[in-house]
Length: 209
Image 1 (cartoon, rainbow, N blue to C red):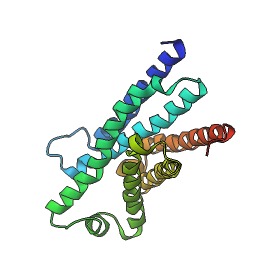
Image 2: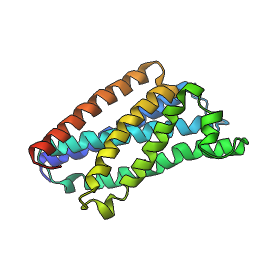
Image 3: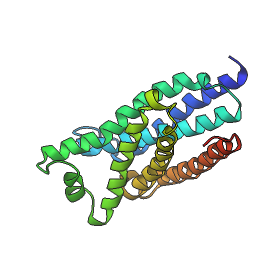
Image 4: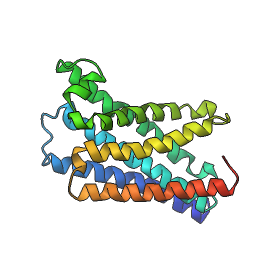
């Protein structure tokens, strides 16, 4: 493995550990480091924070790999491993909330979380999260359909879903309403948009649709 490939590996796994640590730290901080008697309402937010941090890292690593001219195989293990974690987290994030609302007698989604969890003016932000989840799950079909000519639209939708999740988090995320972690997410947003721009610019320059 050459030097650039090694650097990419270090950067990729380093970002995964770093973003996960930040998410766990702000979560623990908000709980005053008291973890006894936690409910699903307490646990589900941090799963979304970790998932987004890992997905953000995917974009950064993809841009670095492309910039350094490295083959996809160099970061395959990283992407495969962290993608499994992300899939589990994006299912558990709403899943725990839905289960807790059901146990509390509020019925099934979307009514349970739209009527009994988010405020009237924030239903649209909750729906953004639901729509993004559907898109992310569709993206998991890439192993079978990524060579199809229409797959580019799913990839584009996934990029739009990432931006939607940013908005979803800013509007609904308990940990993002103020404080240092809101600044972290602003940095995530700026770098994500910049990296997307670079990736799409390079695709355009290569004549890819």
